[in-house]
Amino acid sequence: MVKPLKKAVMPVAGLGTRFLPATKAIAKEMLPVVDRPLIQYAVDEARAAGIEQFCFITGRGKTAIVEHFDVAYELEKTLEERGKTDILEELRALAMPPGSIVTVRQQVPMGLGHAIWCARSFIGDDPFAILLPDDLMLCDTPCMAQLAQAYAETGGNVVAIEEVPRERVNKYGVIAPGATKGNLVEVTGLVEKPPVEKAPSNLTVIGRYVLMPEVIGHLAKMEKGAGGEVQLTDGMAKLIGHQPFHGLRYEGRRFDCGDKVGFLEAQIAFALKRPELAPQVRGFLDRYR
Ligand code: G1P
Image (tube, rainbow, N blue to C red; front, side):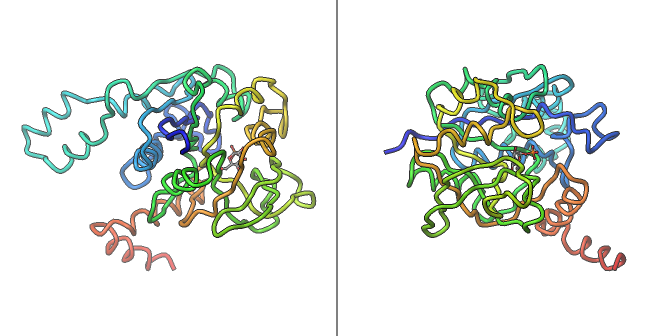
């Protein structure tokens, strides 16, 4: 029996420079896809995988992210009085159980590995999930639930992976693959943003992880990697050979909402999944052919 997966860490301290000026005064994680902010998709996905405790790694200007999960008493009362029950139900489903969200601050952007290390007290001795809200997932079984299932079977570390065209591997963490069993690939090496010609494969890590707490000890050394930042990938690489480590070829699609085109495509894909919007959206798309 593996230790149950109940904790998730969500790094949300990034500056969102690729979306300026939209992100000058609001957090990029609050940008909506259709009608809900990116952070909500990530939290809903984690909850669907049985996760109950959340740690947001935040920074300056990110208050709205936490408030989004508060009970908005006045708003709810007004909606109730006006008989707007549908949206009221949705808002109520959003409120998190008391004490289930904590925040820690990452004062200086020193890399994803450093951000995760900032959550060390929250993580303690437990396995934990990481969800990067920029990676928006469209999957029949939520991506984190697929990872949690794989973790329950294999134990140890499991990261979601996908194949990308060779020339794009330098944008991601890349795995060196070992034995494959179904959708699970043994990870024998990990490199952050390698030059295309040095990449061990074209299997890249996306923003969904289940990790063992021992990764924190490696991150604590604050060794700088790709881009002069403390990289999560380098910390994870140190676990290989000491603990099980697998990549899961998840089923579904990922939209890179840290990128303008990815974000626009996500709007369309998620709108087309909504029966009340799909016919109209299809209709207007025809006009842009
Ligand atoms: C981060 C990770 C990288 C991973 C990617 C997935 O990179 O460092 O290993 O492949 O997320 O989205 P970033 O996108 O923050 O540069």
